[in-house]
Length: 475
Image (spheres, rainbow, N blue to C red):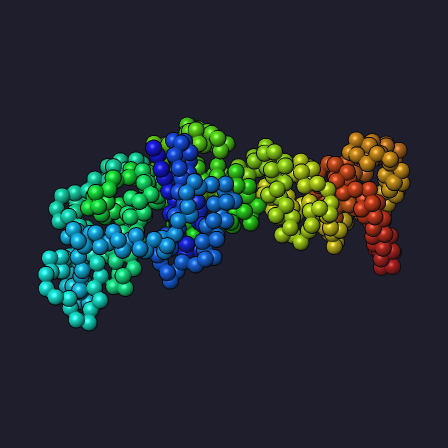
């Protein structure tokens, strides 16, 4: 049975690279019908925070990456780590090291002077004397002195490490707390993890972890190390490249479906296919399709995918995500048209949910002022007559739906001998404050009769004031 895990350290937000690792691990488990485990590696007590844990859980929830086991917290497993540590000490596979920091610094300085790679020299590896007074020892793993470790990487192929290049790793600090590489090994062993999919920045840890697993007589998981994600400029991904975290993607107005599709294509491919539903990802994802080289983010690709999902997903689903963005604008979405209908009207012309929410704001709240260029061009003396006729025609309607509204606007235009746009565009500016909106009949249906008539009255008053001001200045 396949069993994977995602094991972030809660020292910050769930960043794009971590989210991709979580997605790949989740997809691999789902495709093979096995469980997916969430483990919080919080042994870095100085940097780990409850807020960061919540950020990880929130990001996983927003993406829809549900876990079958966990979340497990390493800080709640210290008794188990101590138990395994004592086992290794009893069996002579680990030992106490009494080196002081000053002695280790001097050792490294000597090695650097000899042009050697700084590393622990194993001086307490076979120490049998009494404990050194005044020194709290660390515990080191007795790494094999010769031979090699072959990491049979499912993405990179075989990667060979010489044991002679691996020094004796500290597995417990002087205060007794276990270290990262040791906790990971015990957790993967106890939780029966069969496949470890993680960033290739962990590749150098893997031979050490394999040696500890072998010392414990535990099976070795299969490993797949995913190349890192770069910015568009080929540099290491950072905040300067745009959204660096999952929740920033949400805040910027991207749909989780678009983000998942975007992430899966960062380093994995299936032919030339670009758009994948979640069910397709689960059916098709395999580590053999992963690239060996780093992938670069492409913000325009994420926008392209988001536009696709805005237009093709069920409007009811999109509206649930839109509701959050509407709320961020200080709007109660219940005080206006149904969000599902707003999505249908605005999705075609929006890049993100944030754009959509801003464009639709006028349906829920009156705008403060007209866009200057739109008002100068459309709210003119010549527009006053048609707008007055529109107000009368719309006030007389008994059926406030797009078809009837369209017929009324068309009739006013024909009576005035004007093109439809010459009537519809001043009306659009009057009700929305801007020159762009969905088709005017749909816009008015969503806005409603009372706000529509009130805003036409406001526009007519604006035209009168503007003309009076021009007359007084002689313009």
